[in-house]
Image (spheres, rainbow, N blue to C red):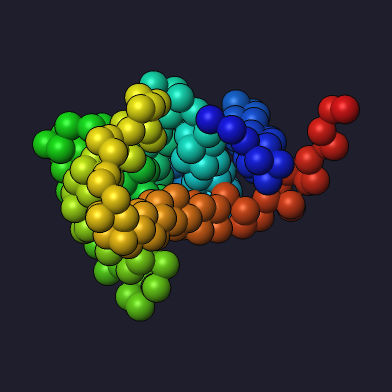
Length: 229
């Protein structure tokens, strides 16, 4: 995998965010007893909100960083993100940002499995969480876009496999069978469609999770140090 300058900067920034969230969690974790106290005493609600936002940013950064990892490492990062988002929902079941990010995580995870049945299980979970997010925040176009991609995920995955893109994306290389010259027009159309699919699969993840990750980042962590020369 080749990284552009923008990719390197993105990895640096989101890794900085991840480390900051991890440090904050280690400094002030909440256990279930503390959370019950927060829910009883509303004067402590700010503490709980900060805790949840930290978990959200942490999970969002992991989902972003997973895009730049090998498949096994990406799966580990996504599972870690999912566990953090599930913790958020345990404490605040109606938090639509967490439902949204959890749906994104499962959609991303689904594309890491070439087995259609396994992938469908992840797509189904993604649809469930994203639908719940939209129900909690009706009319949110970003949520709707993410839900549309998750619903169409199995079809997208099938088309990627048919065009040999799935093998390349998962590091198999080699691609699919070569096309005959009289099919070049059709192949160009499919290539454009696949490029659109790649934008949908990757671009909306950046949009969906990046917003959560960046909210409050400057205030919470301050500007990142300059990269080492």
